[in-house]
Image (tube, rainbow, N blue to C red; front, side):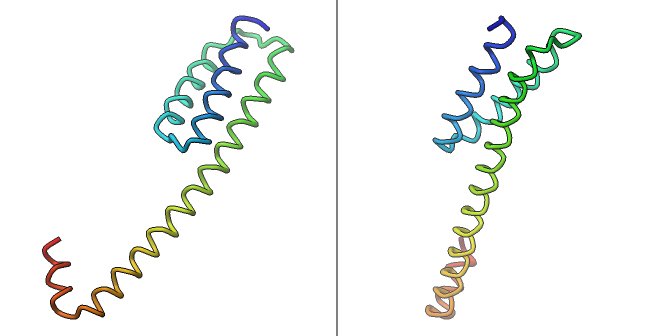
Length: 103
C-alpha cells in the first residue's frame, strides 16, 4: 500500500464507524477530507488507484443509503410528532391552542 492509498482506507473505516454511530457531522468532515485527497492524487493515476477508489466509491454509496434511511426515519418521527400535536390541540381545545401560540 502506498502513502496516498492508506488515507483512503483510513477514511473509509472512520466513515463506516461514524455512519454506524449516526455521527453525521463527522461524516461531513470525512467527505471534505476525501475531496481533498482526491484533489491531490498523483497524475496520471496509476492502475493501482482503481481498487482504492472503487472501495472509496462503495463506502460513499453505503453512506448515501444510510443517510437516506436516517432522513426517512427522521421524517417519520416528525410526522408522528406533528400528528400528536394536532391531537393534543384538538383534545385540549382553546387552552391547548393558547399554550401552543405562546411556545
